[in-house]
Length: 437
Image (cartoon, rainbow, N blue to C red; front, side):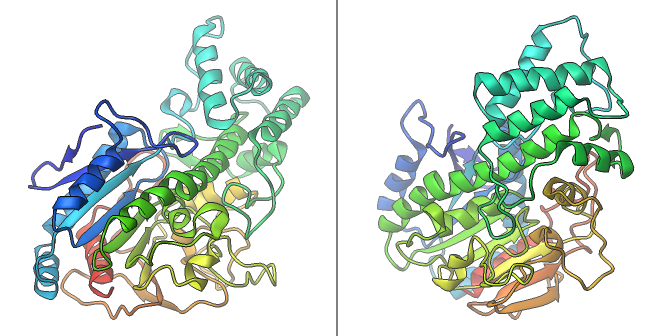
């Protein structure tokens, strides 16, 4: 992938691509990470920004998201003026991480399956796509064939046939995902997989997003894909992402600052980059600021002790315990994020959608809905501010920003405001975290 220009600006960013297991992909002229290292050896870079997109992104989607986001940050002229006044010679280097993150695709995101049941090719295509997402084995392909054939035969069944339930159980086993509850590694931080329960829950409380209907026989498949993408995000962050960060830090002086931002499942990638393999590896040096925007990871991920499981820390607690971020960590929440308010709890095994009008925190809930929670943390809850107001950010604290006023526009697909992050107010919060570091 070439170095990517940002339309409408003088900026460019490096797009570093990883495969599904965290290996950096080879480019025609060598690895992109080496081009970045070469740049760092002769350019007077002061700040390195690393971004990770979330789920539902292919390469064109990642490019579009990074261009929109970087352009939004570029347009916050007052913030840029301020950072240039604070730091003489400010010169950023921008890196976007690409990772294959489609938990399901548009080929079957509809209320019915459109292809002819007599046609073999589309069925084989679906089987292969999901085998690559969940488990690349002959056993999983046979299970997927059973599931898709049942969906083709009856697109609105009243019950789950026993052979479909058994196929889902086989597919879950092949996926390698655990069911170890909160505090476990992302992807295994769930209840036991219950395909029939998911099917019945979706029937009782349909998950509808405009023109798309995510119910029926295929709903458990989408849930399983959802968890597999969480697992993939963690693996990529702990392996290729961690190694990329380590290489860049080793190649730069201590005066070069590092800032990480993730969106959705990208917040898992970013957290895993900081935590390292198995969640307990040491960085070359701490990074300076972190922004977790509409995070699709557990609200308990960073805490020392999960209240609903006393004595068990969140999987990414080492990020806080080992002081891997010297500046602030900021997070965003919005009540208008349908992906986290509806899909996340259903995928976790909860039978009801999130209810916001309550002080009780759930056992399974997303950071982008509730913020970072749990014991052993310095947490500040506040409203996201307009661009002409300054934040009281200080080092070492976590700031949960109620962003419903700004992250509010439905993108017309099925995720509500989940992707509505290219807003000047969101960029302002990220810039203010950079200032405080």
